[in-house]
Length: 131
Image (tube, rainbow, N blue to C red):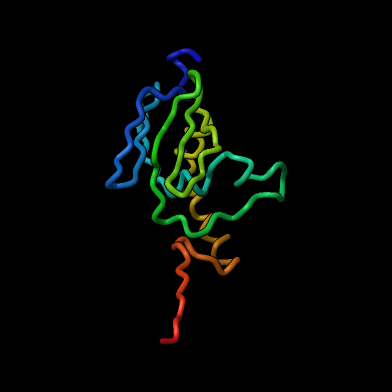
């Protein structure tokens, strides 16, 4: 990709405290994507499946953090999350699409969660012991 391609990412900055990834693109557009959003919309087969209708709804990811970001050539990054997920390659083009359409994707996701009776919050397992 040439540096004039608007999908080219110039800079990535991750704030651990805010759990936000800031992306600066070649056309000077800047976006912020949360770690949760990036995890939920991972381009991996584990999340997207291997074809239409095989997507796996991601639940309980509200507190997920990014552990590391590794460059992949000049076209993508691999993001490792603290829940062990690290198999998605986020191309610049995919990141730009997520950034530009994040409100639309997020609303769809919230509707899917609601329809499935699931939550963004990690499930809490409570164990009871009789003394």
